Amino acid sequence: MTEPLLCELSVPGRRGVRFPQPDVPLAELPKELARQHFPMPELSEVDVVRHFTRLSKLNYCIDEGMYPLGSCTMKYNPKINEETARLPGFANLHPLQPIETVQGALILMYELQEMLKEIGGFAGVTLQPAAGAQGELTGVLIIRAYHKSRGDLQRTKVLIPDSAHGTNPATSAMSGMQVVEIPSDARGNVDLNALRQHCDNTLAGLMLTNPNTLGLFDENVLEAARLVHEAGGLVYGDGANLNALMGIVRPGELGIDVMHFNLHKTFSTPHGGGGPGSGPVGVAAHLVDFLPAPIVDIIEEGDEETAPLYGFVTPPKTIGRVKSFLGQFGMMVRAYTYIRMNGPDGLRAVSEAAVLNANYLLSKLRDYYHLPYDRICMHEFVLEGVWPDAPEVHALDIAKRMMDYGLHPPTNYFPLIVHEALMIEPTETESKQSLDNFADVMIKIAEEAHTQPELLKSAPHITPVGRLDEVKAAKELVLCCGVGALEAEAA
Amino acid sequence: MNIPSDLKYTPNDEWIRVEGNTGVVGITDFAQDQLSDIVYVEIVVSVGDMVKKGDACATLESVKAAADVYMPVSGKIIAINEALPDTPEVVNSDPYGNAWMVKVEMSDPGELNDLLDAAAYEKHVQEKSG
Image 1 (cartoon, rainbow over the protein chains, first blue to last red):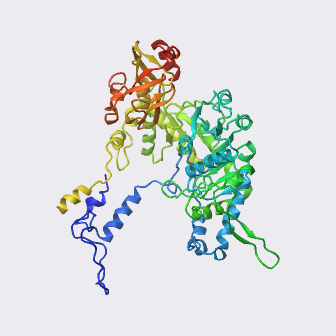
Image 2: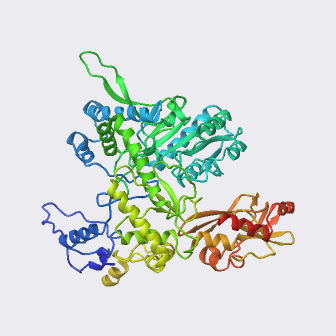
Image 3: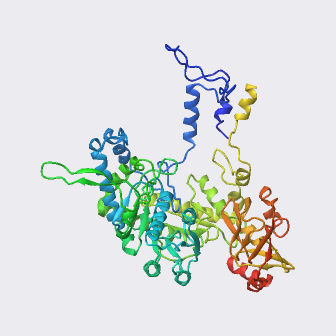
């Protein structure tokens, strides 16, 4: 490592803060509970500040360059979002303040719910879930509660396409459901014949991602939803890829009964270390009563002289609370800002540009990399990172070599149904120059794979650390690196 | 690619070695190669469990992916490989030997007829690797 750990920088006796002599009696700790020594690094303030400043310079972030992680929608996060989130009226609130004193925040939440309903085609929205996966859990718990309320206790089977995000089966299993994997057909859509076989009275629902993780619009979505509904099941929409659809199609109108939004992907709130996430859930009319409580609503209608009063309501058959307080309010302010700055036409333009950028890159790369599902893509696409005439090179080597060119690698080895997958999502915020540079690098690496494969096998070369030993890292976890040295010193 | 001729296979890359009424189950050489370095093994059934064909009996994790191992046949679990979770690398080095995962007393040996023989599995692998 180029930067030592805090433990390694430690110098006995050095300290960052000196407290003044107390002017009140010292409270004595019970002797039997006090530790004899406590191995913490001993450092001055400047040691610590320089350590973290040096580390921050090693970071790669969306403010520095393109971040083409497929399925993650690493779009640029406009700085005005940070301005609005820091407005004192939003930033200095306490969640337990009386509602009369936080009407502005509640109006923002109410309007964000309304906007997400409009974008998704839903009858109700909860802003509570703190991330996409928690939104999924909320959605599946709503599906479970719906069947339970109808006495349909035998409905425990959830169908999940083999291209799905791993969180889908994990969510269903965590909700006590039985997961059944549905294969994809030759065009990358959900296989309707396989789906049909499972449409019986044990079906709780289908979890569908559209566009799916191959970056393809699932052309069977209407028929799949029809089959599932006909069998009495519900359709969960994984909204991770909503960035391809805004203002073009409403998932609710495709037959999706419940879907989570990723504010931290589609609506430009920071993620990838800058989080936290935020995963609101939208539902169709027949599921509104099951939403988590509380929901922000108008609790007293206004008139000509008084403004309406915003407050909280509890849906009659609610699954309960899924997050302390009201969710990630700071992210709601950022997403609200993003939606208002773009407006309806702007959001549609976002999705169109995201799809256009992906297809532009795909058209530049398809002669150099194998494209397993050869279709017009949506906001992302999946290539194979392997060539029959360069068998020693793998997707991982390509990804590592990209770092030598100053680029963040794309997602690799996902989705699992593509051999040596490289999953590329440029997002709408990359310029033509940025896309051209990315394509040039990918093409250069494809050439190197055939002429100088060892360059790829040994990459990265210009990063602070070279190729990491992932097997050793997974098998020999060191959770307290350096503490041993401090303890030895103390003893 | 090593595909022993005395075993039966599933399309999902499990093998079973039949010894009388007992079946020994593991994953194939092709499967370990696809998963790459295995770093974690958990046997998710216990001795005495009744399992159905298609039930998960183990979970594997490599640096690339996680995968479940499914029972090729139904029956009663009579042994699990307790050493394997401590030595996950054996799945890579000896998939047909010391990396066996469970032994099952078959309740319906007729299910073996649904499995692939070595030649059929080899063809299946060739199709999968395109």
